[in-house]
Image (tube, rainbow, N blue to C red):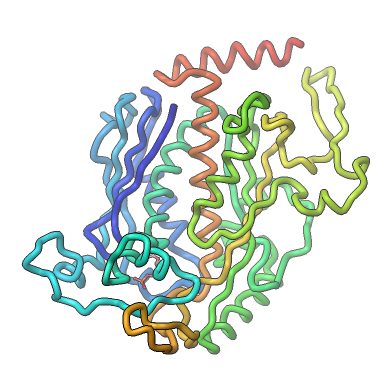
Length: 387
Ligand code: EPS
């Protein structure tokens, strides 16, 4: 079983991620991990924190001479902003009180529920960990998982399909076109004219001291048929992927395939008819409304998942709130925040999906070494083709 944990506060020394159960023999290049970290940092609508951070991962364990060892892989990303917070977030008791406490909960944040749940007297003890800064290390972990998936020709791409109600028309683009266009866009949007409209929308939200959410789509190409299982609720791969996506900060909804639209159509207009290609010796579908899953298993078609992100809750525009201790009403406002982080969230989505698919691949094909996995994978694919 593959599992991971992360640790770290937004303005603490750094972020740590431990990936356990990763097979031996996979080529791991820190440059590839860093490329993914950069992809998460860019994007129109980010705030000035992104000018401070220049995320780079260090591999502390689990990799020797460029190959995974089968032991836990530990990644570290240092926070450059830490230098401004050394006393404020220090582990040492003598630094207590060096910065004032935060007592005013921001609507939409973890502030109030976390403060009450953990019995703190400073909201900073909650907001530092609730921050979406944590997603940086998840992208690092996800990049390692992507390297395993690449060994099986499985690729994961993402693009932004809507920001603040401005959405693309669903064009029929080839996957590599989606990838190339998304990578070239400041909003990871494949349609240049829609991207312009989205930018305008973000600019006007910024002027108003407001924030915006949106929708991104993740596509996984070439997954083998039969990942996950119909036999038990917690083995259904579509459920595990939805859980992973919902665990990303600010995500409010997940759709698979045509998603909610399926509830509005006749069955004959939803279910993907089955065909057999004698030459390629494979079953295939002409449509992919199910988004690559049937019965909690992959059906061999590309996986298509969309996620809805709410607007960032840290607003320049004051919102009504109540001081957690004096109980006096006030208007919550801040000095620094992102206006829109949907493009970044798409890259985080790729990472959490990569982890789940890698885990399902290890479950199905064994996970001690890459060569063992490949033997089992090749044998299974031969069987699949020979039916
Ligand atoms: C975040 C608030 C902002 C974002 C941060 C997430 O940070 P700060 O409070 O330091 O201005 O920039 O995102 C990141 C640092 C990141 O790397 O994505 C929040 O409250 O969630």
